[in-house]
Image (tube, rainbow over all chains, first blue to last red):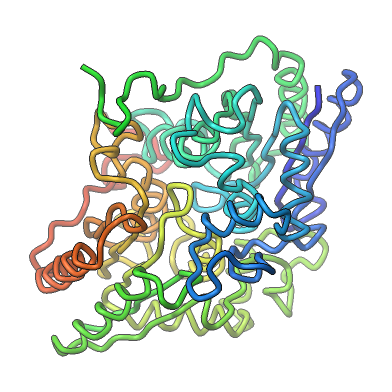
Length: 233
Length: 233
């Protein structure tokens, strides 16, 4: 299997970075090909803007998704976006490895999503969810979080973590056509002992061993909607 | 009332930018004080990193929230963060004006959230939700989106928009203690006529006229949880 790990943490010595290293080494030991996009290390630019397009379809008014389609069709996507998109299209599994900031991805990783999930390739027109451009590939989140798991139950103070992650799990990964595996969550990370961290890394290796048998999260299917996206009787 | 509008769109001529202008002018005509943070115009840096802290609490290992608390206590927050935080603390109402990118905020605005909602001021320890640091202030989203409203009903293909926006509405704004007003949503923007856009701007003015009577979205209350955040019997 070809695996891309997109990693976004500002501290190279963080536990989150250790998770990235563990996954890289363990997946390679299993015989998989692994590439890592370490967004902070390469100083990735997370800002979607007109600067992404040297040759504009409409130089007077930027509609970002339309310029993405134009640039993709003409081979004029920005070099960094082209490089990341090539890695994404190469992989069978993409792992997003990051610390939860405000119940979501850090801006650095949101910028990768905004810029690299290119309209006309990853989605566009009626190509989303089970007709999305990345259909056939898998995705998984591997996250660290300060909170404890009991705060994310259905009667917990925040509600289920997967509800908080819906725009990412469904609205981004599922929308793009990916089979989305359940997130691997390292809870309470800033407050736990080295021994507890070791247990989490062991759990993560075990999760990576069982990727093939993991059941993807349920996603909407366009088969249940008409051409105007109205529910079928 | 003091109003801060945080605006994040890469195209100055966009309909989203027109919404920002309409809100600024209309709120001023109503007698309110308005400041606008136009994040693309000022080239805001959205990347939370070690570069935000000249004087480190722990120079060897970055824990972003801990360095925020240290920098805040010592007056060494980065100048741009300090400026934005001062505007946030000045305002009675903050409006986030942006296009929905991947069912969420653009990376530019996520970076404002990551960097400006400073630990030790906005939240920290047991200070969140109805004990959050911004308690007493209001917040509202004003967004543009490509989709149509029928795609965001409970039986629509994406489910309710407010569910997609939960990490923002509850996990960020509610968490910080803000009273969160229902979002103002401009649907289907790339595909509608100038006349339809005019109707949306008129609807937006009417919404701004009735801010005082708007009912905030329900949020969790810490009164229902014990000190360890377990639900009270």
